[in-house]
Image (cartoon, rainbow, N blue to C red; front, side, top):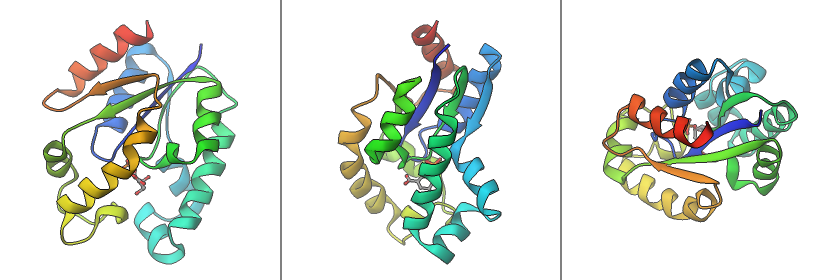
Length: 166
Ligand code: S3P
């Protein structure tokens, strides 16, 4: 069975949905951000602060390259992973790519006030989300399927996903 790759912007529910979907399908769940943190031995926030985004992207590509040769898994990526065409191609080779989307308001309320997401940790978080979303949109459009998660529960989204993958 092909991998089910869940991608999309921060706060669209990739990890929660992916974990639940994997449980429903009895498949292994992998979150690329978790693997990156394990590899680095520090959390994402610290990777960005100490070594910068470039180093984070290097680890991200390495992790994606390593997992992409396997099949039969549910993979949740970080929000920027598929911007690199090599990452997209690697994930696509053995996987169906599903992009989760949400309105700016929903993303804003879901990501909260914390600074664990370095790319939107500035004071005007809403503006940062909106600007980054514009840049990311063309990449997210390359997904095989898109599900809008605005105003939907995790269970609702998983049901839609099951219809796609079954
Ligand atoms: C990022 C999203 C984050 C994490 C890192 C970079 C991005 O993952 O990979 O902070 O570039 O959009 P989530 O989308 O799981 O928050």
